[in-house]
Image (cartoon, rainbow, N blue to C red; front, top):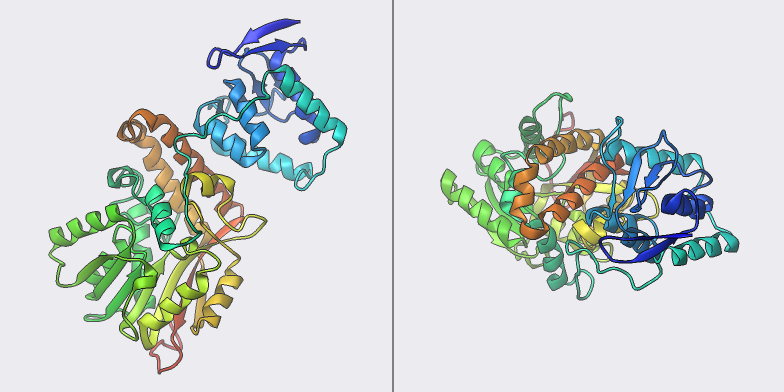
Length: 442
């Protein structure tokens, strides 16, 4: 039996198999992956095992194994990936998207979801982990992982959760998004349509559905970097109040308002949606991909704010992501690294919430395929600006870059494969006459 030392941690592990660490790991996890390891695994000792035809997965440190022991599945793998302890290098036609797609397909084909494993398989895996020196205290959480405290969906915790994601850096987002800084699904007339045009088409579609004209009043809840608020004012002549709890976003929008001479038309408030004081006031209300952040318990409050803010007979439109499956949030990775406390549900359940909140749902417009094209545009910008993005984030730039790569690639897959959706839901407040046309072209 020979020994090998992890150069990063100084941990010495024994090699009890002729194939080295990689074969030892492959043998141990075989029962958990339904047989032969479907990937080509390269361990920190240089040994390889598994399928030569699969994507290459590199374990650069025993800490990758430790993380998977402490957090089996998605979270442990994500932690190892963002820290660089686990890598999926591009080669032989494989990239991160293709590798993850392949892994999902193998898991589905082998029926691994919900599988219960035998005690002997678990004991074998533990013995292998002990032999490799992987059984110890868990490695420290990655610096990019959120650590949000406080009562779930209290105003303070919501501000902290939103700040973790949206206050990263306005410049960071400007290198990924298009000039309007629209951070939501666009509306693509074709796969070749430029991202900026698709986002402007989406904004125009929302304004048209809401019936905005010169002098209309609009409340934009969760206004982001102001794409909707500014478009409604500049192109449709609306008078807009936008609300956000992200301080960096407000600074960004206020600067654009000043640059474009829109101070008499657009007001941006640093305000929680629950604190909006107006009642029966606005002609229309929009909320673009903000409802995912309010939580299940608070969604009735959100629905009531949408209703009470608009005039009787006024129109309300939300654009919101949906999800099916066992994770009502974004999943362990998204909730830990990207959007803490996010909550999504099937679109029908959201419609039921809105109806119980006193709104009449008139249209549900599914845009799932459009989000695949939007994320493709973001990824193109993301990869083109790699060095600048890493540099912006200082000493942890490489880790944050890997977080976002996993986020964008995984998100694109989820929309492409139907695990997530996004919909525009158009409503009216029913206690007054509305002017929504019976026959309409949107």
